[in-house]
Length: 114
Image (cartoon, rainbow, N blue to C red; front, side):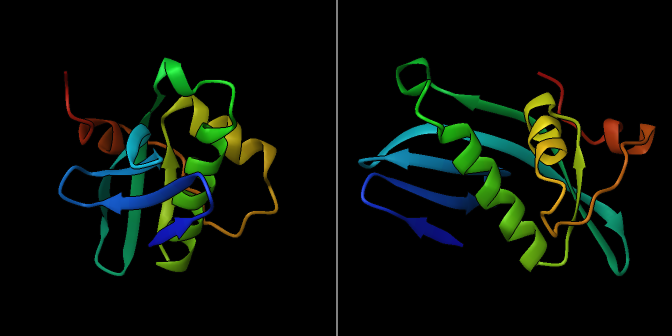
């Protein structure tokens, strides 16, 4: 998945386990996820979203999360929103077709510790 407009690009970087948003070629932010689930039931556990201070106030977090949710929906992957920003975004966009799964202790155990 790559989306572009005149100023930003969103893409999934599986090697880093995150979606990134760039502005004029520079990383402006990211949302991290880990893949979970059982056979036939794929899930992405989103646990942290961050936008650099120099890009705050431009709506980039919303654009980033919207694209990550679109990609997850297209992949048939359910989302587990542990990140407060992702949870708020989903709560404010109930019409979005992405599947939602409540976090369990098993999901939380997959999140890397800093």
